[in-house]
Amino acid sequence: MAQVAIVMGSNSDLPVVKGAMEKLKKFGVDFEAHVISAHRTPYQAEEFAKSAKEKGVKVIIAAAGKAAHLGGVIAAYTTLPVIALPIQTSLMGGLDSLLSMVQMPAGIPVATVAVNGADNAGILAVQMLALSDGVLAEKLEQFKEDMAAEVMKKDQLLQDELKKF
Ligand code: RP5
Image (tube, rainbow, N blue to C red):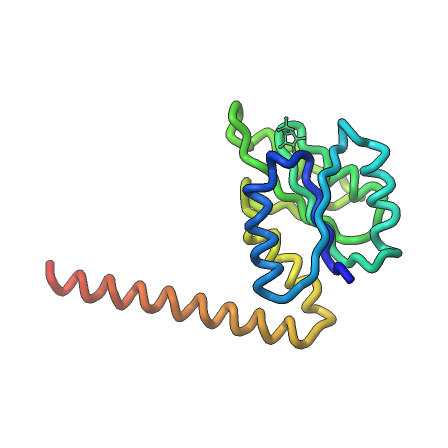
């Protein structure tokens, strides 16, 4: 059963959204994904959001660009946590998407990651699931340790370079 549902406003968002899918796959989290638009398919957006919880979904990732209302619209119809992923746009660089998602009025929170921050959307979803999943929590600990080791390795390389200056 999919614990995470990903919705994107258009299939043109998919190249970015794949980053979140890859992170979920890395942690062994099942997900489903759909193209649903808050503007072009508002009825489907409502239906999806209203039925997600009873289907067993625990976290929703909503990716969209431009006047990106998708996360807010989905959040309006469910009590599940919604992570919004603003997609970079050609005209305004994604600032339009970011502000449309992050500036939610009080009462309907949407957790917004960086423009094109798909990796973090995936990781944040895993962190939410890990609150009630010990195996996932351990995987996250290991993930952070591996990241720290990578940074320390890079620092060592820098120190070696500096010796040659
Ligand atoms: C949004 O409009 C989508 O999320 C996408 O980022 C943007 C452009 O969509 P297309 O015109 O490429 O379908 O709804």
